[in-house]
Image (cartoon, rainbow, N blue to C red; front, side, top):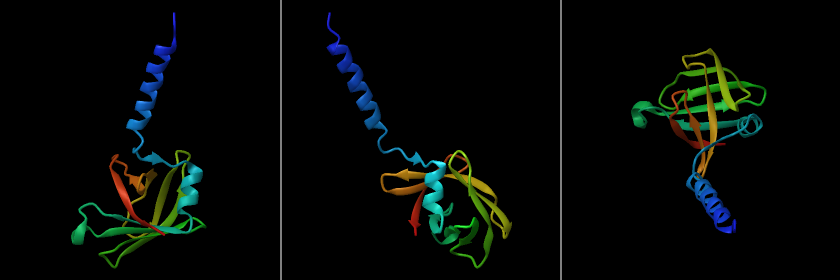
Length: 128
């Protein structure tokens, strides 16, 4: 009786399984999200995109303040941000028209993306 063929089958199946998901976006941990966002801005496309939707730019100040602006509008919103235990960044709007909410920051093969509350994955166009 030999176990080598069975071990090979299991090892091959595990390797194929991990390769099949190699490109999946990976949520950052609480610490990774905090480090990635503190003192930086992210820009991502608004729903609808193009001239009608513009882009959203959020600046995450190190001390926990945030500002949010649509690139096609003179209006802006401000408030605070934090990272919850699930690794999601959460914004609390104190002035302006933006909504409070939490989103996962994801690492992708090409950079970063956000997972919206509805589960949609939106690429981050710029992080600086």
